[in-house]
Length: 157
Image (cartoon, rainbow, N blue to C red; front, side, top):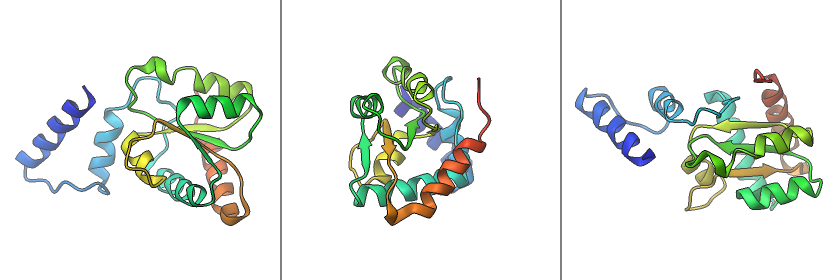
């Protein structure tokens, strides 16, 4: 379903002669249009880049939890940090409980448009649906910027 929609978007941009690039604004907008209805608050492009940089740093420092089961277990056990959820997960039921869990434990969270980008950010060849990034001294300033950016996003509640 998702791959078919992406293919159709790429074909339509190629037929118009537009240059297809993963870093272009049009591509980010195309990915945003393919997100699920509950993907709010969705990180803007600038915040998304910061989130991916922190994810890469935390992956190198081994301060990251990835996958729905691992993230949910870590939150229930009391780990603190922030959660980044991919906005193109199908079926929605797989991740629909995570925002509620994050709000109960007062953990900031946001969505990014594509799980493929989230997986690449942490250095994985497979797409990743959600990650929990915990605090570490190696990327302290970037971490604080991301927390501030996530808290500034409009809440849906």
